[in-house]
Length: 366
Image (cartoon, rainbow, N blue to C red; front, side):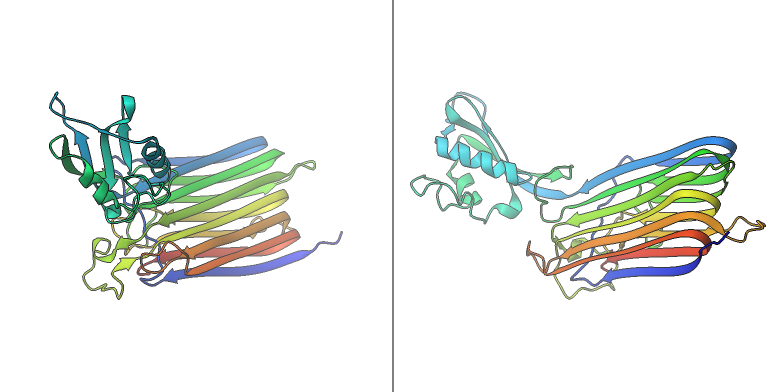
């Protein structure tokens, strides 16, 4: 019998840093969770083991100004034109934090505008003949009679939504999945999963998973498995002074620009007949301040079963690491830098040694 023997060790490290280009992680919510799952399996026969996690967290504090119709008979509501109602509906669908209430006869009951929009042109597509044409949001609020409408200041906090992110807002989307299945043979598995949704500092993680398995085929049986990690972090620009705790981390820029970065790590075992597989992964997606970078780390090692006479593992092993980076400058919402990258490896046959290590960090300071 002839075997193809593979021996490979690859280390891939990616670091993105600098105040002008950096992830800015969301902070924890008031109520947090810790989850731990430990699995130990030693079975001759059929085995199916699956784990999955999806986590999304949004963070923003947006000051808003509201004009509210006063209660009582002395208040005279402003009656909107059909064009104004249409334009407000279109603006609300694309602007997070913008809200209004219209009653019978198009009477305006309330209008809420994020403060960062007050000096912007309100409704650029409205007809030039409309009274609101060419006005800023502040000007529109000023047209509402102060004797009929009262003005209040408030803060809207982050919530998950599909529209454009507000200035200062950031969102992190995390997914993790792991599966192992055999149709027989001898499997020994030790797996530990730990999750903590609280703010993490440098070098710490929100999700950690470590796994060691040993498998040996019996009567033609085999093992299949896969593990996949994904970290998606995006944010609009934010004031640097409000985002960095350390007084010595002075920034040349007054803002941390907008960004949208996605990184993934994946491994697969296909028709795996024998060998020992060790994997370890971790990620960081939540922090109290922006000087803590986002991070995703993953490593896999495939070796022969300790003490086996053959001296190699048998099967097919695949890995894939990929990322898409988009970064802006200043307060712009157009990318000033883009970077797409990937790393794919596949080995099949007699495996003497196979190791891959992946590391990613992106932040104001690394």
